[in-house]
Image (cartoon, rainbow, N blue to C red; front, top):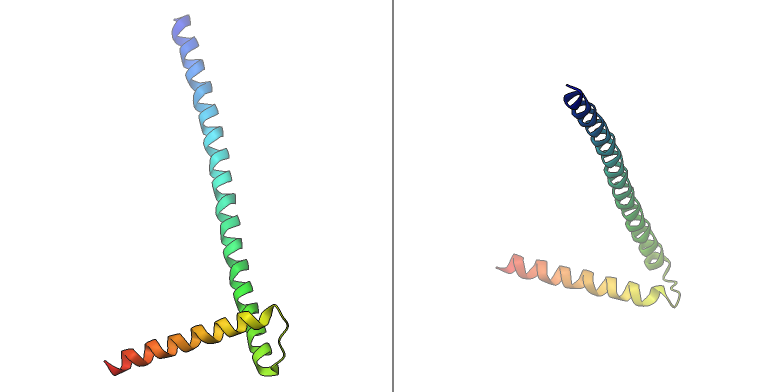
Length: 91
């Protein structure tokens, strides 16, 4: 019987440690998901800020050396989108 009691106690301890580790891993996973979600929110805010900055630059027609090539690329991409949309409408 002592052997059975000893095995029961070891099984109970193992189960307890497994539960603790599972809780710890679940907490870690939840934190990682929160980090990714917050990073996605931050990326969205950068996009919104970039769009506002683009509007300010194009409305004021004042460009610095770093933003001018980006504004030109954006304008080219917008023009390409318009052309592609027009080609769809012609079909």
